[in-house]
Length: 158
Image (cartoon, rainbow, N blue to C red; front, top):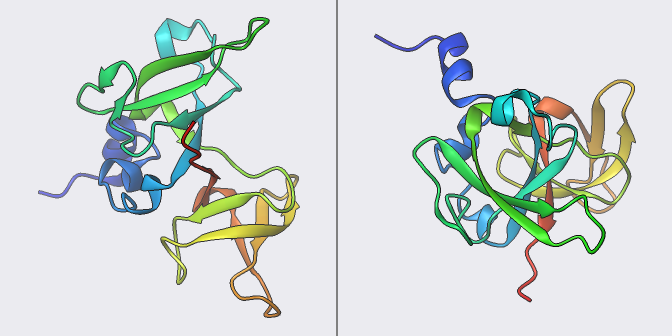
């Protein structure tokens, strides 16, 4: 018996593409940026409305060790003065892809013909929740909904 989309969404959230390791090769060199749900950590909301970044090169193993089954290793800057990095293991059901907010940001395409590619945003419409991404220089871009893309940043070894 095949699990319904609703059951899959409840158990692993909107990140089946990450949990299946489908885009693992892309995430060797890029951090996926993810939004944290309000219900994470008992509803405290400490990370709500903030973006967290996946660990690189393995989003399932971060500075504080391997993530438990069904969780992702992530980090973000603390909200305090001095902004040290904070590392977390967050259940995938409490995370969703972060949308772009402006031109020239990079996004991983999660759906459609260009699935798996990382492309630059040429236009971003926050009101319509869409972004136009450059597929080839000089060619028309493709317009995708925010749920079809995930904001990424290049991994820089420090």
